[in-house]
Length: 145
Image (cartoon, rainbow, N blue to C red; front, top):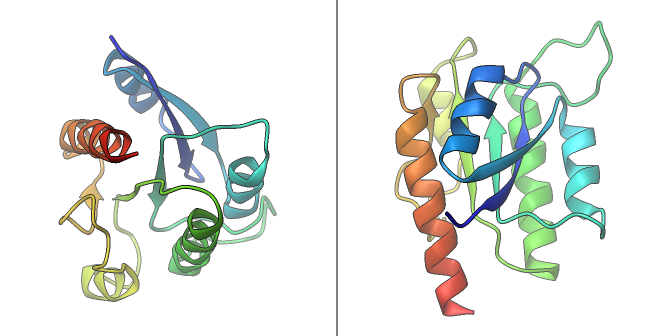
């Protein structure tokens, strides 16, 4: 089975998600805040095939910081900036809710993503769809390079 490296930015990563992703051929590097995730993305020693963003995450690892959608907005901007300089890396939003509502979430996610027509995947019920679409997107992008 071909394996893919995936960056996952989530303030509360699930061990079961990591294990299930591994069974699907996805090696997940989980970072618990936006700052750590973007640093890992920009580190030249790392190479990622895709990125998963938690919609309601932290920007820093400060104990007192509350997760918010601002982290998603920041992460999307950073990923777009990085991918124009580097290569196209598909990114996906995986969310459990617990914020201002799905309408607010949808307005923050660009519809210009060429690799997936779904704006987000709901935790945990849509994780297998996420895994499948993530792998399919990586393979399609790699076949065009």
